[in-house]
Length: 64
Image (cartoon, rainbow, N blue to C red; front, side, top):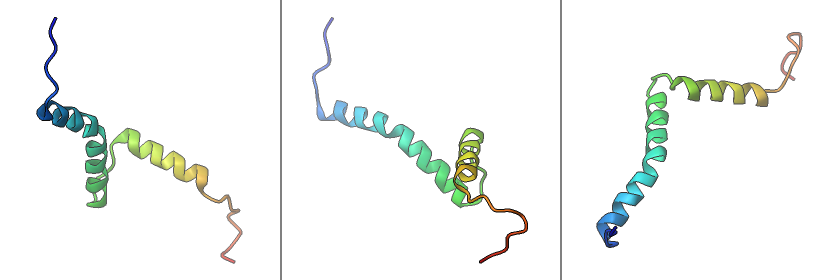
């Protein structure tokens, strides 16, 4: 079995394929910033993270 020679074109293709997940995530964030809902798994994870990091206050506590 022979392998393709390493060329600048092959390196570009490999780089683009490696960046696809980041580009897709960036597209979701841009769409969200423009008012579109986040995809379900992303929205659920974001809501869970916000709840984990929100301060726990009693309903009777007002702003200090």
